[in-house]
Length: 288
Ligand SMILES: Nc1ncnc2c1ncn2[C@@H]1O[C@H](COP(=O)(O)OP(=O)(O)OP(=O)(O)O)[C@@H](O)[C@H]1O
Image (cartoon, rainbow, N blue to C red):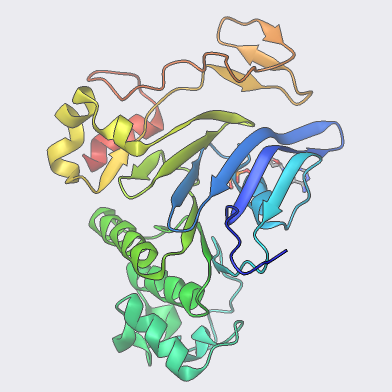
């Protein structure tokens, strides 16, 4: 059998779940990332985003279901936190080749791709949030990955900076033709650049294109003009919680064994004027 062109998704999960002791960290996750596709995992803290990403990357073996990675998959990773002693001087140039094997030309080419060649001699600890994210992106793409994994890519970046970073991620995807798997930790902010949004809540709560959401007249009335098409706010409420024993408690207080895939996960619509009072809505209101 010829292995010249592997046309399988870069990574895929099928009904994947992880159990630790008696508790399920996450279950029933279906996910694929194709070359050139941007997939974003969203959901509240502890909803299983990192666990799902780790299963997709083959770092964590699913207890149930399957996880597959394309043969010879190269992954570029932007971590959520860096284990770096910030009291030590470290130039961007040196940082680029600190943990990954890249030569000077590759490092500079990558810094060029993310628009920060001019920072090569700068101290990493002096970088602004946006500059740091660009350097991290450069480091992740330096070895020409098939898949770019971004764990909270707009950390420490202000609102206009966020749009710039998301636009850059989209540009990189277009230029490098890589797939992108993004994790958004505490924001229900999803970019128009995202092809697929998978919202987790201990299981796949809902999924779809941000376009569906951003084309909603109610959404446009609130955010369309201001957001400039670059960012969509994906707002919804979870109408049930997953109990540690795997059972599901619904909004009406009833408890059931399963949360079926065809189960109505409640109002996943866009925010309406005068709607609830969650932190997400406050954030959306502030940003908009
Ligand atoms: N090795 C482990 N053993 C036991 N529980 C774990 C382990 N790893 C994660 N968990 C738990 O599994 C759940 C899902 O964790 P996960 O890190 O995937 O969530 P997350 O959506 O990425 O959260 P956050 O937004 O806070 O980073 C959490 O309740 C977490 O405490």
